[in-house]
Image (cartoon, rainbow, N blue to C red; front, side, top):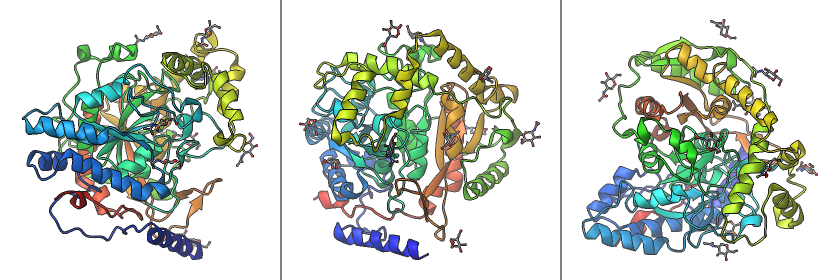
Length: 538
Ligand SMILES: *[C@@H]1O[C@H](CO)[C@@H](O)[C@H](O)[C@H]1NC(C)=O
Ligand SMILES: *[C@@H]1O[C@H](CO)[C@@H](O)[C@H](O)[C@H]1NC(C)=O
Ligand SMILES: *[C@@H]1O[C@H](CO)[C@@H](O)[C@H](O)[C@H]1NC(C)=O
Ligand SMILES: *[C@@H]1O[C@H](CO)[C@@H](O)[C@H](O)[C@H]1NC(C)=O
Ligand SMILES: *[C@@H]1O[C@H](CO)[C@@H](O)[C@H](O)[C@H]1NC(C)=O
Ligand SMILES: *[C@@H]1O[C@H](CO)[C@@H](O)[C@H](O)[C@H]1NC(C)=O
Ligand SMILES: *[C@@H]1O[C@H](CO)[C@@H](O)[C@H](O)[C@H]1NC(C)=O
Ligand SMILES: *[C@@H]1O[C@H](CO)[C@@H](O)[C@H](O)[C@H]1NC(C)=O
Ligand SMILES: *[C@@H]1O[C@H](CO)[C@@H](O)[C@H](O)[C@H]1NC(C)=O
Ligand SMILES: CC(=O)N[C@H]1CO[C@H](CO)[C@@H](O)[C@@H]1O
């Protein structure tokens, strides 16, 4: 308890130092609070002329400026954001809106490239100043939908594919990101800044990327909804990769509806990423917003793989999970015991390592300007080990050392053998087999153990808020002092599905969210900006 008190005291000191409000600040005007505003709220205010997108950009930038010295959620701002907002305001005034995100500010992870003044670094100085020939497809689609790309969010460097002793949310360029629910909270990773930013309204929503857990983990730590789409539903073109077989890009937002709207905008076939050619129904994307159905739990068949629970979730998380099962049963869900036939999958680093060797080289070959002349993993390793800003060897390069030690890339037969093992363990022996055999709509797991099985077969996951550690909880920290479990730290519930079943997962997640309203009923962050939209509107 002494430790808790001193941590809270230091939080208070930080708040005083930076002149921030605690979450008890109440605003009296009728403008939406950016902490919990939805796309509908912003769209309504914009179309009624209560505020403009320029106001939104000013307000979000001011909020970022207030908290970023502590939370380090944002690596850089888009210097053109105000000009873009003004153009979108003018278009709206003339009666034109580009799409469902017209004039809505979105932050994207600093591994999703834009062909503008912003950098795309994966948090590494090796790529600072590098240029791409055009926007990534994710950035292009956001712009087509009318979004304002507000800036680049911090991340676990290289999407957590560099080191065995780094920390979630640390990058050389952005420093250590921390979560907003407890001082020095581990933000989860690797889309750490995307999670922190969405959790306290530094943008309406954000994009993250996931190879195994990198959207759902920071989403749960930020009391958020995160959608990890089927690999291939969203293009990876000009996204700094780990693995073409496992990487995917998806939305992080405060509500299922907002995440669904953003997913709608970014999903689709892209000639630059052939995995998107596997999207069913000739590439026609379902109407995810129309799928929102408060009654969707009724009659749904949801599986629980009892024999596959890992040690990753504490008793607190498991208790909340079983409470959620009860809530679902009361709502008409048919819970089906759906054990995996392979209870403990082989864990191999070969697929990711060999993919990274190939896929990183392919990304680097796309650069139109490559200031540090890095063309391969070996080049990036040499750069990283020699630039002191990269904190080597304190943060080692163990994952790269192991990938290079393979001596082959993803064209080698030994890679294909491992890939087939993965497909079996996640497929027939795991998630996809359980869904097939039991005619399931979805499998549920605590988010802290949901990533792995879906990752190895490219299957989708949605995490929604489930609960919080109690205020009496004794803080536990990791080797770098980040709080793993502590008072008010959020955790989530994951719905895992078969390939391309996002529409169904969204409907189930929405029904659960609407029934439980965990996010709004739960504790608020320990830190929030005290500037809001009303400070920027005449
Ligand atoms: C990108 O990095 C370059 C090189 O350090 C820097 O001059 C520039 O300001 C950065 N861009 C932004 C938008 O911060
Ligand atoms: C994409 O192209 C790669 C390399 O040519 C190939 O191995 C893979 O099967 C293709 N994927 C799809 C979904 O077409
Ligand atoms: C919502 O879900 C319920 C339960 O599955 C179903 O009966 C109903 O038709 C759905 N409504 C819509 C509009 O799809
Ligand atoms: C599923 O796994 C659990 C936990 O290992 C076990 O108790 C149960 O008997 C299994 N069920 C079936 C049908 O095999
Ligand atoms: C992958 O390995 C093959 C066979 O050694 C080689 O021809 C190819 O250039 C390698 N590709 C990359 C990107 O390293
Ligand atoms: C990380 O690992 C490297 C060796 O791989 C070691 O030199 C360094 O001290 C470690 N850092 C920490 C904080 O454990
Ligand atoms: C696990 O790996 C071993 C050795 O590579 C392999 O023989 C076995 O088939 C794998 N098991 C599964 C279920 O993938
Ligand atoms: C469980 O935790 C371990 C160690 O932190 C991690 O390697 C593994 O991926 C996690 N499993 C899942 C399914 O998330
Ligand atoms: C916290 O730690 C103290 C001292 O070790 C112990 O007495 C107490 O039971 C712990 N509280 C919880 C909620 O675990
Ligand atoms: C936008 C912003 O605040 N960027 C900061 C991110 O963190 C780095 C490292 O602390 C700063 O140099 C940037 O100014």
